[in-house]
Length: 101
Image: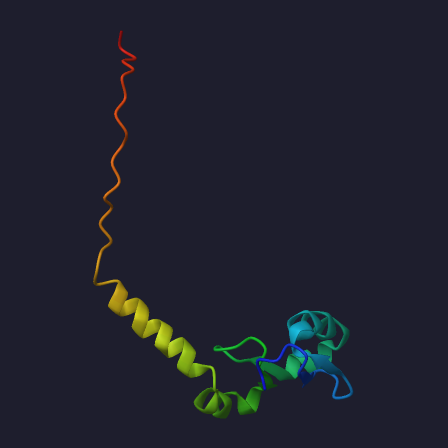
């Protein structure tokens, strides 16, 4: 189960690192600094920053990425929602103060 925070994920920078899913984003930042040569060879998926793949595989990854559907769904939701403008019904409370006097 990929939603399980205890699920182990393999680090793209060091194949010996097995990281719990809940700690994976923090590990990526730290491990990237420790392995700058490997980091230069990897590209970040535009749909999920946790997906790091070799530059020459990025095109294939984008086509097959499981998170692409979530982003596309958000884009459709936002474009449909932007057609309706929210109308506020808020009115200021009455005020007896007159600053002119």
